[in-house]
Length: 400
Image 1: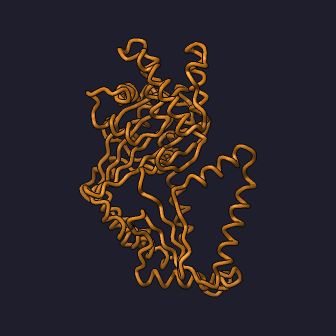
Image 2: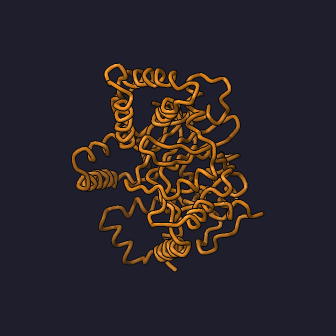
Image 3: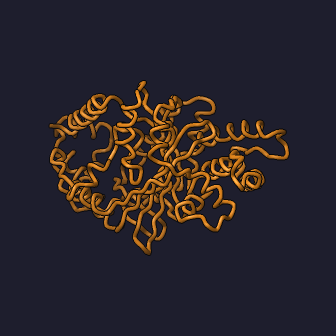
């Protein structure tokens, strides 16, 4: 079976499983904060699952089954990427040993899967409601012995390149590469894979991706990248195009041109924050099932921690340190809106001070100044608009 055919079969089977399970879980957005602790050799990922819901009408029993597959008993949860088509759940992690993936024909993949199976810890931190009322769930994923992953990732890349090269219809595809002007670069890439090239490394500057390039073909490669950017621009207009430009400009990545390679360096000086908006539609049809399983209101605890609550636990402190700006705003706003909370009034003052710092240090999108907005209902509307705007901001960023 060809690589393309395997991908199609896998995708179709995944969709059929979802349909047979009476519906798939979707997100309105997903956000990540990623950081690496050299001393403990641990890679940590905070994941925010924004707006989980079903796109179909579901009854309570079906909602319970869907949420059970996502959150389990509410303590660990599955690791999900964008929607339930891409989910690694308890059925994987609870096995004594990871099952092999024979259809990939790559032993390196099985070694990587076994490492993930044995070294990943998961914990559901709590639930939250954003200013639009959409429910969300926060999860902490920790990979122990993270430095051991790099050799495995490099081995998978090398095996993948060699597998694709072996599957090529030599005459036709080699001729196509020659017509495009990249035959020499392709040969260098294959040779590097045969030597066991380290594609990804960690240096004092950060995470480095090094790709072999033939010197004679560099200008054509640069032109191809420029054409790709211009072609992409056709799909965006007005503010959408500006958003894409801001996202590119915010990437903490540098590109350097070496004699026989391109090097992309991702700075690891600050946590890497990734923000994605997936869809605008949301239905509250899973919210009650989620709230029954995840009873901890994370925002109330994070809001108190932002105001210096000495009793804040390590998980709330993690979100204070590594969260996105919208997480800080949302937490303070949750406390401010809760009139029964002992820090209710103080939270309004803290949110006003937070807004002033944001406008001074970052300034885009501009947050509402509490002294200039009359009435708390108007303030809630203003913060709601700010939350909508910031979700459209740079997709990848470091410190803020």
